[in-house]
Each structure stands twice: as C-alpha cells, then as structure tokens.
Length: 394
Ligand code: GDP
Ligand code: MN
Image 1 (cartoon, protein in one colour):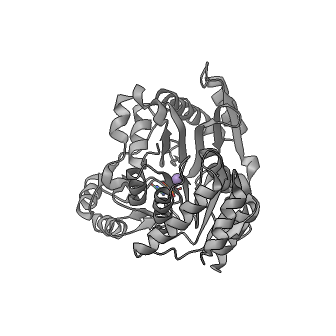
Image 2 (cartoon, rainbow, N blue to C red):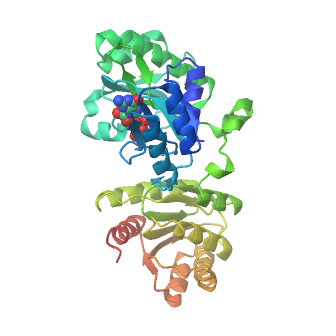
Image 3 (cartoon, rainbow, N blue to C red):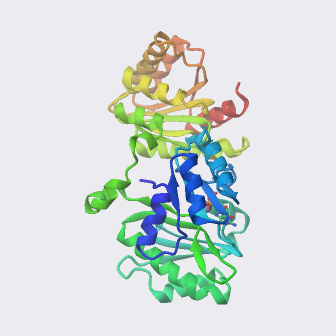
C-alpha cells in the first residue's frame, strides 16, 4: 500500500527522521491560514500517490498567504498528475536548499534481500539518475538479521561520496530511516530530496513509503492509513467493487491478462516496446484471474476504456483451465455488452491468445470480425502492435 506524502512523512518522523513541520489543507482557506501561521515563504504540495509532482506544477513556492491560497486553489480545482486528481495539499515552510541527496531502502526481490540506495545527487528521479549517472548511485545489501549497522551506513555514505561535513548527519538519517523501514515492515522508504540547508542540517523534504499490506495485521495503526474513500482513484474503486485486480498506472496502453505473473511480464514487454515509440507505457495492471467470462471481460474493458489516457488495449491470455475459446467468447460477448450499454469499444484492442484451445479462440475472434480487434501471435509482436497503436492511433 502506497502512502500519501503527508502520511509517509509522519511515519518517518515517528522514527526520528528529520522533517519540516507541515499542515494539511482541504481548501484554499486552510492553506492560507497555514501559510499565515508559519509566516514567511511556504511550499504548497499536491498530495497524490505518484511521483514527479514538481515537474507537473504540483509543488509550488508561495511568498505570501494569498499566494499559497492561490496555488491551493489551482491544485484543488481539478489538477490531475499522472491521472491522479489532487484532493488535498500540504503546506510546508520553505527550506533553503544548498544540496539535494537521495536515500532509500527497499525490499529487493531480485537479490532476495533488503537494499539501501544512496546518492549525493538527489532531487531528480532515481530512474533518471540511474540512466544518466549510474556511477553516482551507491547500493548496499542489508542483512535482515542484523539490520543496518552504523559501519554499513558509513560505508554507504562514503561510496555515495557525500561531502565530509554532512556524513555524520546523513549517516544518522540512514539509521533512522532503516528503523522506520524495519519497524513499519515497509517495502520501500524513499527520501528524495534529502535536503541540506546552508547551516549543514539535513531534512527529508519529500517522503515516499510503501507498506506491506500482508503485514497489516501486525500494525493496528496502519489501518488509519488506508485511503479514505474520497481519496481513492475512482477507477480503482469501481474495479474493487467488481472484485477485479486493477491498478492504475500512468501510461497509454491498457493491459488485461490472466494471472499476476503474466500481467507483470506483459507490463515489462509493453514498456520495452513502448520505449521505442517515444516512451509509451502501460496504463494499468488488470488481472482477470482464472475466469474470463463475458461479464469479467466487459467489466475489465469498460474500466480500462474509462481511462482517457488509454489509447490502445492489449489482451494477453494464456489458456489453462479457462481455455482460450472461452476467453474469445468472453471478448465477443463483452463487445456486444458494451455496445448495448452505449459504450462501444472505440480504441484498438490487440489480442494474443496462447495455450489451451488458442487456435479455436483465434478462429472465434476472426469470425466475429470485430473492427477494433487485431490478433497477434506472440507476446512481443502483440506488445509492439499495442505500443505502435498507442503512439500513432492507427
Ligand atoms: P516530487 O516532484 O513529487 O518528487 O516532489 P518533491 O517534494 O520532491 O519536490 C520537488 C522539488 O521541489 C524538490 O526536489 C526540490 O527541488 C523542490 N522543493 C521542494 N520543497 C522545497 C523547499 O522547501 N524549498 C526549496 N527551495 N525547494 C523545494
Ligand atoms: Mn521527490
């Protein structure tokens, strides 16, 4: 479960990570009052569970309470960032920043352990930094039985080439951040930027935390972090009400598959194919599981197509107990159902069927000759076609 910044920073502060004071505002008037109380310039920050808010205009400096109210009004009046509607803003006294650093801990499934990541060149997104200046990023594996030791923290700080005069402060933050990660059973804690003020103090100016939903029964206090209904993405809510396993992402290719593993690898293949198409990315994760009835397929397609950023859809199914001919019947029936509801499928749908009864499934789709449907024979070609359609629209 991803937390909002305002929740994440509180969780980190409980474990001693230094964060500036802040006030949450639901409306411009509250933002004005908060700015007035803090006195001096403030930063108004959109609260959405997605990154890159700065670039999207969701982090703005205000020198007066009026200006803070104005920024809040602009953000709360319908701003969306990567498809996430801004419903609340955080008002924070502006810090003077002389350098921006990066720190995170994550459960690294590939190396089957916890990993610490640090860089003295924070501020930009870590993926960007990894692409541009991989040598500036230092990593350390953390032995889960011993936790982060001071020696490992110091080694990491040295490898990341933090300036000598902040090493102590940064090492201290690392140890506290690890405490937060371990005690809260997080999957990720990330501070970017960890800002250095001209006086030498370091402060977590942004916080990202993902807590492990499977450990929630051990953390009664995490229940209050579950998103309020009105903060939930409306499409995710609709999907949840229909018991669909759907997660909205910020790309353009809708993805439907059966089985979480297949859907995840489909996301990777789409992202790869999309990179060659100017950065086209998956728009969602939707696992229809074992059942691919017409209703499930119709609900899935309807939710995906309700997302205006979706420009093409990729249905990737490996027939098992639910055979591909049943899935194909489901797709044909879903198209009829949506048509009858007055929401005909208006964007291209690439279908790749493999496994049990794939041949029969393909024949059913060919004979139905649905104008929006294009068949692909492999996962790679399907992803390439879906990415191409999303990029060119034809
Ligand atoms: P993100 O874009 O969603 O990661 O949002 P951040 O909270 O990280 O803010 C983006 C950028 O805004 C930071 O990297 C800083 O450069 C800048 N920023 C945020 N808070 C402050 C502040 O208090 N003072 C100054 N000078 N810059 C800030
Ligand atoms: Mn940030």
